[in-house]
Length: 266
Image 1 (cartoon, rainbow, N blue to C red):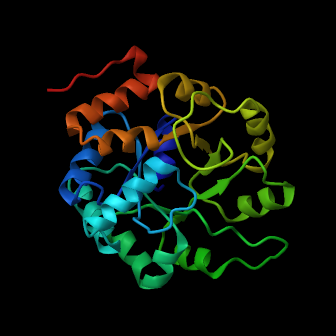
Image 2 (image 1 turned 135 degrees about the vertical axis):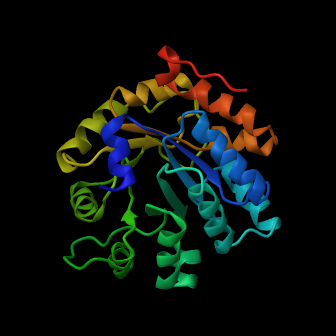
């Protein structure tokens, strides 16, 4: 059983995101480890990209900072290797398609060797009305990486059926229309949307993301979903260059599961 499946089997996980190379490699690694200490069960590492069209201003700025500091696709491998020296937390690459396309199939195998468990490509949808898989997803599976796919509120029956045929690990439900970012609450139709998704993903956990930024919204998400994703709220703190210890406390403050088992840090 892979790390992601084991994690969902054990709990409803807290999935945290950071942009690889934001603040430099050392700071990225230290913050990643702090997030893990703060309760993050699965870590998404974003590939820096010049045109992150699915992301809001907070994560867009993180991409810009990482690129300005010289982050590349090789930086992502270095971060993963360093994390794997001390942690078995599942790692998911969060990327746009172009950087992966430029590196080719060999890079997918390098991701696996570096310690990644899955890959989420934000802007590469599965083909619809076709029994043929997009070649990328076949290559991804050949590299023994799980294809983590997105579903949006606007996905129709045909799209959901095709996603269910390809996705592995978990489904990432985009709980808000628009780009990533901090919002005050979940969408009003969140429960209805989760109920709509369940018949298509009966054997696959569903994690909700986009807009979850505090304990209240995370708690509300976990009432319906099998996990929750926090990105912008953490990246915003990294933009402020807070210490890794402080970032761990931020993660803990968001995690509704810590209400009964508070952690402390030296």
